[in-house]
Length: 189
Image 1 (cartoon, one colour):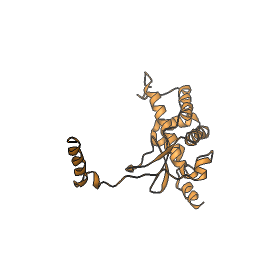
Image 2 (spheres, rainbow, N blue to C red):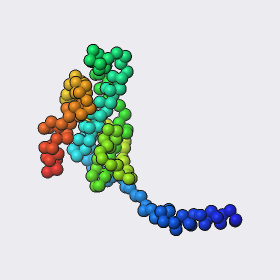
Image 3 (tube, rainbow, N blue to C red):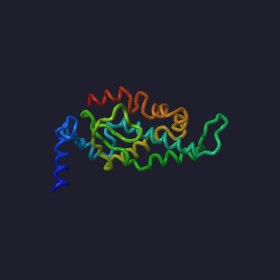
Image 4 (cartoon, one colour):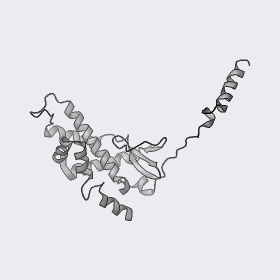
């Protein structure tokens, strides 16, 4: 009993000391409440399409950059350039990759797609991200959509100009997933 008493006093003291265990507010987080479209639709919900586009652009850029670093010799300009067959294969694999690192979380009552390449600003102190389910399939379909819409050659050319150029190609423009006009139209609906 002698060993238990000092331990008990130490624990009780931690609650009484300012800044001890007793002064901290409990951290709580709840999973985002998904509506029927977010849970059951085969397509990416409209309010998450910009995030999805940015995720696809990031994965394409990352996979192409990784393939370029594996090249042994740079081209005459000092840049490593992939052959058409290699970048076509890399882009196809980008779309069929495992998208399990992506999911949805709610921050300040706004649902956002989150995962590699999508962080913006300060992260919340605590949040719950819902992964799996329909999100990997939706991201893969989104990726294949952009691959079909723009083609491997145009995507690789944009990649060579930098990550921003690739994201602008896929997500920008007047009809792009991240354009202000498209966002305003979605808010009106």
